[in-house]
Length: 622
Image (cartoon, rainbow, N blue to C red; front, side, top):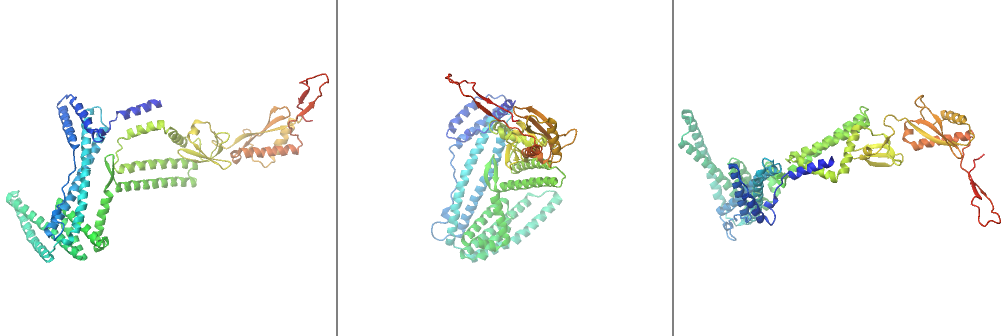
């Protein structure tokens, strides 16, 4: 039966499709593309959908072939704007800053496309792995699409690395060129004042245009094209005024940074934030990058402490944004899902809380046993099972919280089943036996059990895989749980702790049976040995077991309970000492074997000794 199950699971694994990595990895990709092309040519379309699918397969394959010769190229920085020596105009310096912000934008666009392609690959991987018989004809199409997005993602990674290298060199060049820039601070401040004067005019015009728009909507229920153009022009003017003001503030902050005036530099840097938030999304990103570059340059020139102490609120916000960005930045990709530091911390937090809950549950159950509301053995079983159950649920919830897909859990279970069948059989057998023992309760904590002639003791601890038995010599023996299921086990205290033991002893021939019984039983009543005598079920008796060569053999049949049951060797010793002293007290002889040798001399005429001349006689003592 087990072989059939394993074969069935193995068949399921074989039937599951996997990603064809030869489409985008290895040195023989071009030759493999030719094989795929022949496979596509051999496909026979049955309907229009098949024709479109085959055409799509050819198109994607052609793109994959062209992507083999792909070489990442990025636009270089306009280093001519800064030159190698001489003064630099503010216009050129600002243009170079815009170019740096454009590099940031290009990197962001590539990363966003990478994220989208990763989501597509995740969907395609799931479609390939869970493909049905009805959808089998689309398998090659899914494989080609997955390979296309995989190669494109790799190309994006190369481009991002090149852009980051260009950005690093550009920022260094930008910082080194600051001292050569010719800033005209009075002219910049005058231009900033002129820009500020534009805002009231533009805002008043915006109010008038909105009023006119409302009047036209009331009378005509629509807005004329002329008015719409005026409103659009007003919006453009407002955006232009805001971006101009931001650029002027940036130039002033750089000018004061060149002069080492930290306070004014920080005032202009921080004052641009509020204006940047009012821009359109694309402009907001662009100017945020420019502001970030200026802050990095400030940190390089003056240090982090000066920036942090300038404005606590602004610094705290920047620190939060930076920390959040680093925590959510992907560390690696697993099964087409990005794993970040925040994901790892989330998993750890759930695991810690889950195991704390499991430990709290276990402690509460054990407290019930201490308050005598539940037996210790039952509490141990319930707490152990509940602890592992909560731990398992915690692990599943933790992995699910970061988006790991468990739809392929059946395949994983099948693979594990095969591994269990070949390598983990003993471990799983012990775990299953532990669960059976917990519910069957044929062996409980505190029971006195005997597994073999050498292993006998009290059950001290029961776990999922093994049980600890403490012998009377205070030796802890760890026994796999499967041993209790597969082998015979004597439980001396399963139903009750009253047990009958046999104490053998012997007396000499000629001693009356009645005297032996009377002496032993009468003296036993007055002895200090603990035993059970509850007629008619539990009665003490003397049995004659044999008439030996030199003695009459008896057994004292006596019932014991409690600690006497748990220490059989010590109990037997106590009764033997009692019998020995009782027989001596009443002058009843305890026999022992004796050997008498009689040697006869051989006759003078006999050359060889008679083999029967030497005899050995076993005599009884008188």
